[in-house]
Each structure stands twice: as structure tokens, then as C-alpha cells.
Length: 313
Image (cartoon, rainbow, N blue to C red):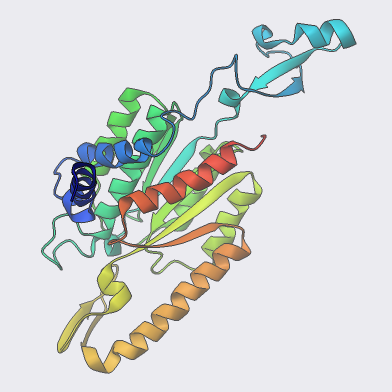
């Protein structure tokens, strides 16, 4: 193996989910992911106001007169403001489900940080870092029925550190509370936004897809990262096992081989329904296993948000 190929292979090994999870600090995980993302794209999505003209809009009182197009005014006797890409940036709202079911996975494989909440928090941290580096505002909304936290969209270094700290301290307990979270978001969200929802969508009524669709109609681009653990997707259990409802008090002891086919069939129906409901309401739906590469998951979000931000507001 030649030297460049060896370096590429070593880098690939460093970017595995297991290697990234072994980095104890959430911020460090996010920076490893962000550096790899930036290595494959332009270092900044933001352009200066003097070089990235988008369109004109009619002048209204309160507009910045520095952006008045005097040439149009001289030719047409019409006051218009020059709009730039910087003015059409869409804040990113990251919604992270912190209900009890998101805690699953932390000790099932002996891998540190393998729980769904840790995977989701790492993705959220990487997205926040990339947004802040690019000068874009990012907001965080963590939610369950027992606890909710909201950080408004900002693009400062201080805000980024607050996001990291909040994600690092986030714990899972209680039932999910999508309705409450969406009510908060609707009251805070600007018309043109990117909304990223990270959840296992367990015990979430299908009506919530319609409510997310309302955000889409209001001008938001909505991405759903349906995050499930490998065990939930493959059902690799054997023998007699005991299941406990992490968000309630239900218990069940069953023979794993006897229920495997039924479980996988029901799972297939569940995923199909989620995907179809998302598409019906024009939402971007991604099935995400906690074993999926962080780079792939983050790139999926960036790919959609870039197309959205490039469109006129």
C-alpha cells in the first residue's frame, strides 16, 4: 500500500462511529465530524454582500439605505433595495427527542455512547458547529414530557458553547412530547427555516406528521432523522428475554425466536407508515441506524439545507 492510500485508510478508521464515540468530549466529536465535512466542501457557504446579489425588493421604511440601488432609482425613479445571500439565510432548528426510549443502547453492546440519545446529540453538535462556522444561526430544542429546553437561533461562539453544554447534560426520561415541542417551535420559528427532527418516533401519533406539515406550508424545510438502534432494526436476541416499556410500566417476557418474525413484520409496517406520512406532507425522511456513519447523516442534512437556502425567500 502506498503512502497516500495508507493515510486515507488510517483516516477512515479514525472516522468510524466507534472511534468517534470513544472521544469523551461532545465538542471534540463534533469537530472531528465537521472537519471531515468541510474537507469535502467549500469552507464557507456565506458570501459577502458586495458579491452575492440575489434580487431587488421594493423599499419600505426601516430598510437599510446603504443597500438602496441608486442606479435603478436614477433610471426608473423607483426605490428598491438590493438583497444579498446573507439576508436570505435560513436558521436551523434542531429538535432532539429526550424521552426515555432514546436512552436505549448505551450498554447493550459494551460500546461507549451507543445509545440513540448519544448518536442524536453528536449529530446535533456537529450540525451546530458547522452552522456557526458558516455564520448561520442554529437553535436547539430538547423535549420530553418531563423536561424541555429551548435555545433561540444564534450564530455566536458563546451560543455554540451553550448548545454543546446543553447537549452534554441532556438526559432521557419520561414520555415524548412532540405536540408541546411543535407548539414551542411554531411560536418561535421564522417563516424560512430548516427544521431537523431527531427521534425514534416511538409512541408518536401519526397526526404529528400533519403538524410538521404545517411547518412545511409556513416555509420551513423539514428533515426527519428517524433514529433507531441496531437491536431495534434487526432483533438479534435469542432465548427467553424480558422487555420493559421505557416510557411506561408495561413488562413482557417472551421467547425471542417465537416473536422475531412478528416483530420484524410490525416494524416494517411502522417504518412504512412513517415514511409514507412524511412524504405525504412533503417532509424529508431518512431512516438512520445508530450504526450509520455520522458523516452520511450530517451530509444528508447539509445537502437538503443548501438546496433550500439557495432558493429565493
